[in-house]
Length: 153
Image 1 (cartoon, rainbow, N blue to C red):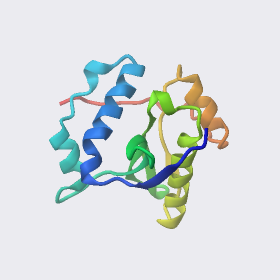
Image 2 (cartoon, rainbow, N blue to C red; image 1 turned 135 degrees about the vertical axis):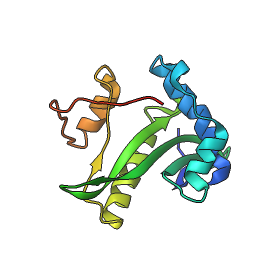
Image 3 (tube, rainbow, N blue to C red; image 1 turned 90 degrees about the horizontal axis):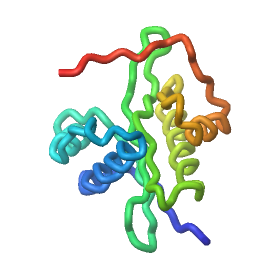
Image 4 (cartoon, helix red, strand yellow; image 1 turned 45 degrees about the vertical axis):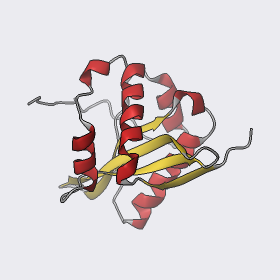
C-alpha cells in the first residue's frame, strides 16, 4: 500500500482530532479516566495568547484525516539550556507499523536542530515494548536513575 502522508504543523482546527487520538492513547495505556483535558483547554494552551505546546500532524492526503501527531514543548535545563520535550507521539492504531511514527519523529529531530535546541527528551512506559523498540532504532539512551514525580491539583 502506497502511503500519501503529509507532515505539517498543527493548527487550531486540528485540536478535536488530536483529542480523539489522545483518548485512543489513554485507552491503549488503560488510563482513559486520566484524560481530563477539555477541547477548549487544549486549544487555548496551543493557540491562545500564551501557547505552551507545539505539534506536528500526519495527514492522510487521500482522506484529509489526521492519522497521528507529535506534541512537544520547550523544556529548560539549567545544565543544558533549551531542550525539546516530546510529550506524546501518537499514531492511530490502524496506521501503526507503516512508518508514520518515524516520519513524525524525524520531523522532531529536524525541528530540534533548526531551533538549535540542545537535545530532545521524553518518557516511555517500561511495559511499552513496541515504543521502546522504536526508540532504540534511534539509539536513544534510557536513564534508570531518575524517578518521575508530580503533584495533582
